[in-house]
Length: 439
Image 1: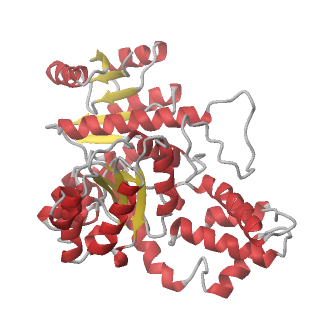
Image 2: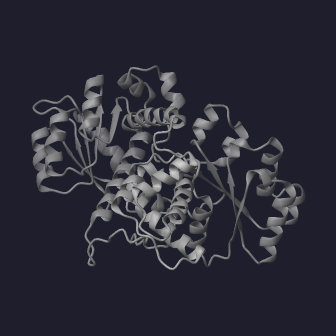
Image 3: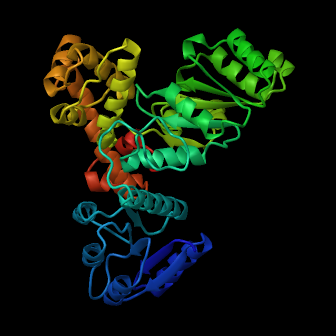
């Protein structure tokens, strides 16, 4: 059975329009024009998402949302209205509304946001559902319950769980996949997970550093894969926006089997890693038309550590065990509660790789004993990696400001004008900073 959506709008014509939109997208729709009747429907039935108007007789949209949130705090809600002032938009954000759209509708954005909200709610429900074995402690094991092997993240946080599922769903991409993430993302680990998704496929995987990308290296990689009997080569390349023009042409030639690459019949597909979404890179003039079209539309956002703080102690415990084995230590250092708190609180500007470096240094500093907050603080002071370092202050302020703007942009259904209105900024500022909603 399809996902069920409750639509509330007192305007019968617009109610019918929304019903048709969702029905055409294979959702099961229940519509109502009276807010109080809609509350009773919600009380006695089960829905995956609610879409409501704001101005209605009886209850307003905000009041209706409060009523259904009392019944089910986790229900995703989208607001569709003809006009919303700044205070109302801010109130909706506080009430937990997941999307705000102004009439006339952008149908594509509405359906895209709907799908994302339902998937997110389902992931949270699965993550929090009790299991027969009871809750798992921070043992360092990545037992996330996924039906496929995934070793890059513990997936306790909903953002990392959603990422794992989306990456697995995209594993069959035909030509190119774009991964969007922060500096310090563990790309080799992610490539290995993608390889494990279809370990029996006979496909070859390789990662080439941008500085090493030239015709000879790529030809050699192709030759090795073909001689090994691979049926396809997947290449991971970082920062295509920073490639030299001649490197970009080599990437095109290998994909299209031109020039010296015509001697190899082996299909080539790419995984590109970037720091910003493709539209932002294009709008900022960092990639040209040809590269923009070549990168395609298959993309997935890698969650930052600050988005998945509950995963971090599990990450650390895994790194501790790995470092103990590498050093041949006789005991495994414990990570005490103060150390776990430190790791959750820290701003990880260097991503997963920074976390791994810090934990490895803490293992050495601990001498095999318990790792505490003081251990990490001492390591940070020795390396200049302080939590409150002045050199990171500007970065932190920029990050938080951009995060807030992106959150409002997401809630507005990716409507730059509505975001600018809510934040009292100009539209140009919004378009220069926004990130894609399906992150």
